[in-house]
Image (cartoon, rainbow, N blue to C red; front, side, top):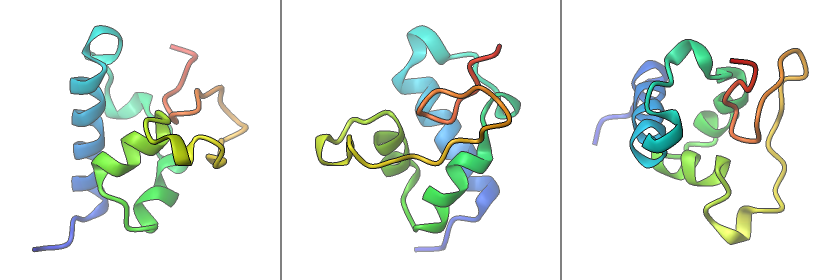
Length: 84
């Protein structure tokens, strides 16, 4: 299986969030995501699905794990900007 590059991975994450949280985030765009927060998950080799599950704390064993937050912009734990 080919390795997913950063741009492909971002698109996959965005699509997963839009599908899984369609009731509140279906219109989310690439520009509204704090990708610096997500980059660490990509560099850890997580799939887009695993990263979304981690960021939205859908895996109980990961709930206590810290997610890096960009202090320059208000963000939710998910790395989605909350100032929109």
